[in-house]
Image (cartoon, rainbow, N blue to C red):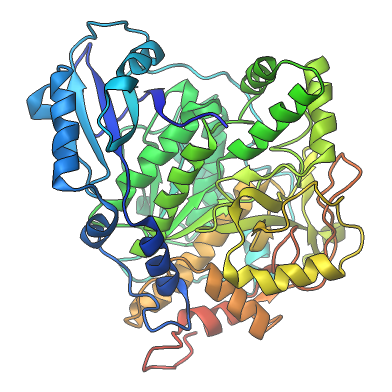
Length: 567
């Protein structure tokens, strides 16, 4: 596994204001007391614990995991010794990074070479260093994710809401309800397209409720621009008239389809945790194969006599396939997601579009593609960030023969609803009993050794995903925004990390909040995969939403003095 020590990223928007010719260095500090913080997190998320929903402030998080004054001082001194502008030095709200602006570099200007030269000098408290350059790059046109396809006529907003039992005129009424979607590169949305969507599918949509939080509003032609339009339409129509933030914190090409994505995500999540106002709901549709999956692909290719470096280079030539630098980086992102959950944010993530074997579909491009396709079909290749134990993974459904009363596992575009088990992240306690029963009783599972039966299982739940699970995640996020809107109106706290409650409700009240989906398989173009079954399975999780059950079990609070069911 490659060591996560240095990174060079081109950023368009940074926390440090940069003048022309300047760059920034960010010293990410080692975090403290992570085991203790883990216990605090699960107590907050556990519906049966006295500290349930006792969410933390940024100051409380910083006091627990942040660096000491001496460690921050050492990082500042080191950056100043390298020539940092004294007035530019900033300490993150969570006390886990120190950043500063620098004039044009006097040493080697190639970022990776510069960082390699700095590595031996960094203080012990600095875990890794990132260089940021405010340089924009044009992404390649085209991509995997199409815009919302109006030809799929039966899958309208009104028809989907009807299938879930959601009133067509249900709208958010609490001014504090806030939902968000995020992506880098060309991510954004078109007001013209949103207006056309409003006219054709969602006439009650108040476009004034949808806003950007940075100057980066997206760029037509890029893959993530289509993503941003789909995300915005789904979360804004299903979380109808809740205040909606569309966020793009980094516009370089490396963040759209390469290794810059992981750093852009980490930057965004850590910065978001320190904001004075947080969204109650965040949807993350973008991702790729996990770093562990990418490592495994190239390790297996090397065992078969192929160059490990050639494998890595090939994967980087593929669009949005391996976008995380290392398993260490993935772990740091995982902690950032945990912090958001502890602060009261419910994070939803697309489960992926390649079944249990691919990020999207099969590789193409010669001998290396053929080798990796063979390896990918022999093993299960989970994606990230949906395999984080600290977010709700959302799979995909479609309607059998166009009948909305017959949900089945979504498949399409050469792939299907992402599913499986993480190679890196352990299975959380709330999953173990149910998942072990699935593995013990389900015939036709993939071969032993092709997946990690002790890893975080995904997805948790599902929604319509005929445009991929990039549709189902923001759709589900919007639905939960409406639940949280009811909670806020009742004086209840937001749900934060809601997965343990989802599993508890589904186990104790089957068929009330989620409708079981029992048809499908994750094999896509391979000869093995996870079959659907009764109850939870790795294709659609616990199934699709049932509005009345969501209101009954999630809009009221088992610990609240008021037990009124809200309608």
